[in-house]
Length: 319
Length: 319
Image: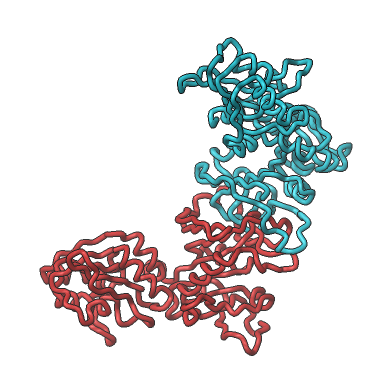
């Protein structure tokens, strides 16, 4: 299942509104086939893994309950799998989509195939966070990235921020970009830094996501003619209306980051910290609407921490 | 030797200008006696360990080269040890004090006692950092403590900072106070917070160090009549002239912390970080005189990191 989850991450940022599923087919303890949801959301992971493979009597590991609903773009995965007649189907997370929601498992069991569920379910939901957040909250999953000094500054007073973190941390942040459907920055960042926000990692250049700027005055925004096409968000809440965007990465500046936090729309915090002190400079966040310290506690849970070169990455999720 | 180093930490903050040495006497693989430098700097650790013990033929572990200079307050430890006739003497760090500086080792070797040196020397020097910094730089060793949110803030805009970190982190910070000879805060902290800066840990209440305020206008300082006696520092450089102060702990606020950093007078950084976001508030540091980002890099090395309840402690030292 861990292998299936790793495969599912390949589709992250490219399959919305479909979930980025991964699966493997195992016979005699060996993986004989694998699949993951393709860009645009089809074919589904199960169809990819089953293509040209005889799965009869094999074990089928899939990160999400196979879908029970047929669409114009393909048959229901539960039907495909029932026909393939594997020995067992092992599922990480059940599908909250009302069109499936247990129906896929029921169809497989009706076909006489043993089904095991809830294997590494949390890990699977984490990699398919966009799909699950869309289902539960009706909006994309939002990651906020901050790259700070030890004292929480993101730039010198003159705005210079190249570089706070080292090449390893910056490469990691580019891979995070590749796993987002859309990057959002604030107006000040667009005007001051003129960022391209592209994915500058060998082999992932084509994974640059859509780009949006958060501003109430899009018409006044100074955009460079030869630069990327910018979509426009009036407010953080506007992410709910985006089509084919399930994973949003907010990259700053302090105002945009604070706006998403104040709106309660940050699910995950990526904190890259360099072992430097800046002193008076630009702080990572603007006003997030905190009235008293008590309210700040219990909001974030540390999920992962690791060194990236000399910098430390910490990943927090909403508690 | 690790046991001797642990013992040496008991004297930290109470033995200046003498080093806080620790030692153990080992016979047949068992510790038969132990000692550490007593408050005020005398008796020395070696004399404490040897008192009432026959060390003939035993192994003697000591964190610092035994002193070679006799004083009015006691004989040279090298002579004491030579008389005790141990089988071997194992030393962590040699003594940079020009009155000893190899002379203690030479006297022991002249007495026919085998001497082993450089065992856990870095660890020993770290615990006796005040003495070594005084010897090498002519000033106390300075630790700067910061307690921040993930975004580097130390208080809300109205100054409220109770509490950012939890009870485990605050208890740890009180033990750090107990291991300092002096705590320094800025004028704003004295006037706004009216801190007592005492050690509020069971069993360590009597370890509250001297307290100083950093200000150019000591005469104008608003002090409470019933509060602790405050010493006065005109500038960070004034620490060099303090008597019997080898370990200084700077506790803030942002201005005092920045003044010590700008003066290049911080040797060690204690960073307590709570898993909270504050947003716009009070930053940990004022202007530290950083002209460009390049200059900020390579200054700090992570020595230790651990969880204290929900908070994380990071200890950095000057690279």
